[in-house]
Each structure stands twice: as structure tokens, then as C-alpha cells.
Amino acid sequence: QTVVTQEPSFSVPPGGTVTLTCGLSSGSVTPSHFPSWYQQTPGQAPRTLIYTTTTRSSGVPDRFSGSILGNKAALTITGAQADDEAEYYCVLFVGSGISVFGGGTKLTVL
Amino acid sequence: EVQLLESGGGLVQPGGSLRLSCAASGFTFSNYAMKWVRQAPGKGLEWVSTISNSGGFKWYADSVRGRFSISRDNSKNTLWLQMNSLTAEDTAIYYCAKDTFQSHGNPDYWGQGALVTVSS
Image (tube, rainbow over all chains, first blue to last red; front, side, top):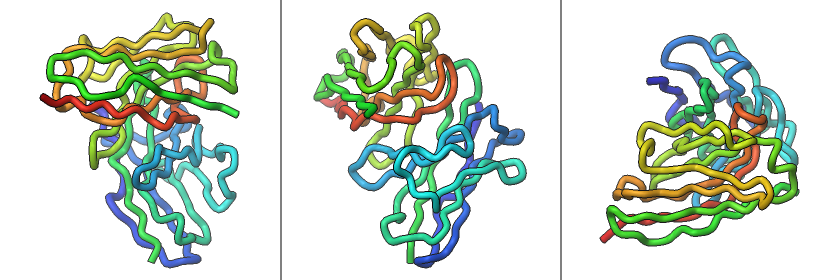
């Protein structure tokens, strides 16, 4: 059973920088997991921020960036704004058509 | 512009069936795998099923295998999810999502979702 781990919550001051991570219960995250990141606010569908590790989705500001940091995928938000307050989900492709989502990180901008 | 529009959600009794549809536009539907992802009330996202671009390969989460069936018609740019033997644990918003590749990868576009409520 593959488990994808995310920080349950994070807080960042307005204008600050925050890095959210996405790990595997066993093993390292690599580009072959095609890590992707989504932002979701209450009552809304997920919005794709980053896919295939580093590719920014159309219309996403460049203050959102994706990377591999150590053995995890990472989403960095530079210059956080109030409307970045949301739930952030990562997902990893683990083979055989299967994708596993992390439990989400609730980001507070405060 | 990529658009995914789900339909077919609603209230169903335990043990009942429901069929969700997803109408796709704005991209070459036959080139990409498609997924269904669900979100129970107050919970996170859960992968449900994937179908390859040709429809020849299908994968299911353990929680729905044997009860749900994914299919597609590339001539109609439409994706379906047939859900049988529904239980209260299947209550969720069901999202249709386009994958980044033909048979693997993760979603890059999402629909707005269809609410499925299983209750007597």
C-alpha cells in the first residue's frame, strides 16, 4: 500500500516563501512519478498548478514552482498572497495507471 | 480551451446504480488517458479509475474494483463511469480529469465535478 505524505498544515506570512513537500512512505520521489500539485479552495474543483514535476499550468503565476528536493517533490510559493490560502494536494503516479494523492496541506497566509 | 463537463450525478439508494458522463472538448480526446477522481465530504482527493487513450487498458482503486466500470467513446469525446452496488461510502463529488499522457501520468485538467449522494 503506497502512502503519499504531505504536511497537514503550514503557515506563511504575506510576502513570505513556503515550500510544501510530497513524499512516499517507502522510497524516493523521482520524475518518473510525474509529481503534480493542485490548489483547492472550499466549494471549488481542484486547480492544477504544476504537473510533471516542474511544468506550470497555463495561467499559473511564476511564484509557484515545482521541484524535487532530496527524496521528495516540492511546491514552493514565493511572495505568498492572501488568496494563496487554500488546500494543496500532490499526486504521484505509481505505475499501472494508478495515481495516489497525498492527504493535502492546509496553507494559512497569516 | 480544454473543457470537461460532468453530468449524471444525483441521489441514489444504497445498492443502486448510477452512470456519470464527462463531455470533453478543446483537445484531441483520443490522445490522452482519462481519470475519475472523487472527494468525499470534508475529505481529500481519491483516485478512482484510469482509462488509457484507446480504452484498451483500465485500472481501478481497490475500493471500487468489481463495482465500477470506466469506459470511453473517442468518436463522441465522452468518458463514462458506471457505478453499481453503491454504498454510503461512495458519497462524494466525482471529478473527470484529463491525464498528461496516453496511458500514464497525472491530471492536468479537471471538470467541475458531479455530486453523488448515496442515501436511503
